Length: 206
Image (cartoon, rainbow, N blue to C red; front, side, top):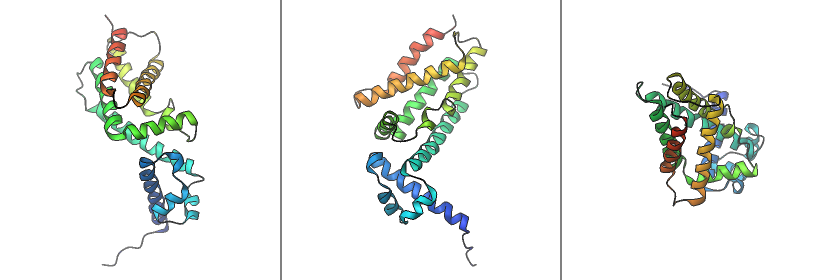
């Protein structure tokens, strides 16, 4: 049977994905700023002009990579939350969620990439709205848990669930930064859990 010829659209998607995957591999092993467009197209096996058909700049490619990765990661967090027993205490659910986040950061994303992300945030070398945007799904996931705790009378807070969710993420970011600074001498999961246990003591309805 004769193989079907790929359409122009399919070839275009394939080429773009090849560029993205090549860049992703280079970024994992090098600092963002040391990876050039030339090195990306060389690894992808495409012409430099082809790169600019799909991306205005290297930063535009990095931004797209971050968006894609963050979406996949947040879907994983949401799936984890849905997998928990429906009769689980919300307090335990919150701890389980932060444990999952610690596992993903430590074992899947890794120290090197997290360090690069923090560097990108502080130097503004890459548009990182996908990570810090308050509309990110991770904020919504925390809000879902907080709302559940409020509805079931487990939590008592003096702010909206949206505001409290932002504080939860700020705690995680602060501990993650400390982990980067003290790596490998600080246990990320232990500190996540410890700080959230302290937080829970403050919001637990008595």
